Length: 226
Image (cartoon, rainbow, N blue to C red):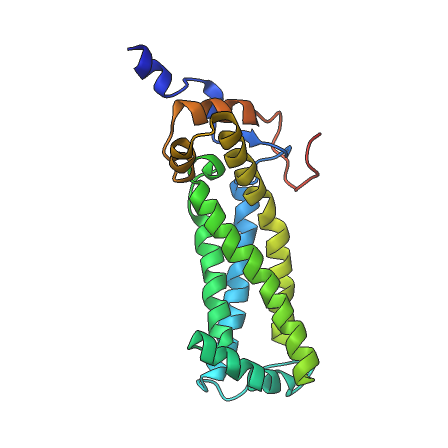
């Protein structure tokens, strides 16, 4: 009976979906934090898909209000062709799939997914952060190596940087939580269960110390609480 009672901590904080994880003064998994990410990701998805349709020659030209035909030169460049051989699809389509993944993973899970679905948050972070940085690097390389600039590529690169900024806080809280679980338990089994969202009394105790309830719901991101 005691074991059953201790299996899950019956603390009201653990059942509040708007609980705030360390080190922030807001919940990075809240919908008002994630929905803007999904909207931006879908905008980038449609832009990248449009460029991919041009690379597949399903549209005749690539629109560019600033650099003229330079966008087409970039999309038809040797750099893009090499990446096409690597990815087996046009690089713009590969980017579109990544942006779609950002939107899908951004919508998946509850506002406590940093605790209940750590694997999901980490996959989301892998999709957003490294691929976002790679997107920016590729744009710079295309501009310097090809000698042309792609307006739509620059737009998606800016969106990628914004997505990185908007997504890192949730990933950081998730990693801090997993690190704290490991430091408190030193158990690979508990750590593995926690990663996959399988609740244990030990992980719940860590979560109880890791969260606090909000006095109010901030609408904007702010600096980590000290």
